[in-house]
Length: 123
Image (tube, rainbow, N blue to C red):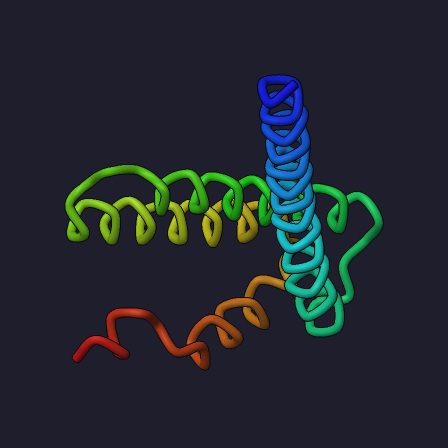
């Protein structure tokens, strides 16, 4: 009888733990989607993106956020993580820049110039 109670307790605790883990993963996905949408909205307000540009920029931003999340969870030296994150950021900027038309590019460059870079925060 004690074994059945212990097994039941173990099963309930396991189910609760799995449920919390699934909720955490869902919340992280929602956060990535929301962060992507927020950044896209900012760029759309600035650059007046077309529908096609919006879709492509959203996928770029989302992809980089997912990749950065993976990098942050890796067991690497912090300096290596920082280098990878900086390369990802530069790649995102370059990919977005390549999608823009002639009138949007100067606005985007000006926007980037006003952003605080992570390197300046460290100094």
